[in-house]
Length: 88
Image 1: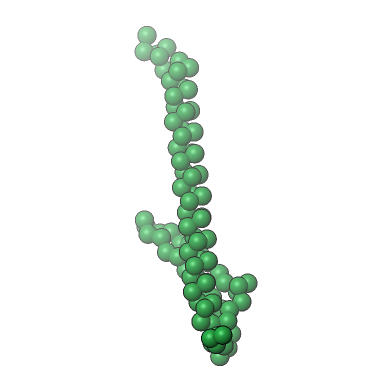
Image 2: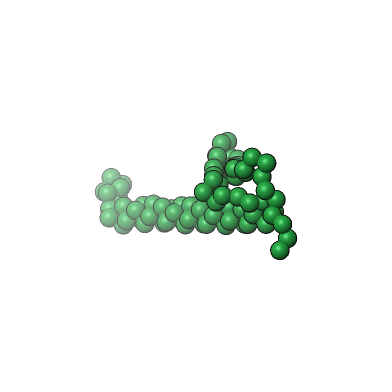
C-alpha cells in the first residue's frame, strides 16, 4: 500500500508547486537586489558628480559574493588632475 502512495499525482503536484514557489521567490529576490544595486550606483555617482566632473561611461560596478558576505565595488575613473566643479 505504501508503494502506491509514492507515485500519486497529488504528491508530485505538491512537490512541483513547492519548487515553483521557491523559483519565483528566488527570482523576486534577485530582481530586488538588482534594483538596489542600480539605485546605490545612481546615488553614489550623483553625489560624486556634484563635486567632480566624471564620465558616466567610465563607471564600473561589481558585486562579489563569498562565504556569506557580499561586497559592492564601485569604480569611477577620474580624469588626471580631475576638475573640481565650481559653484554656479
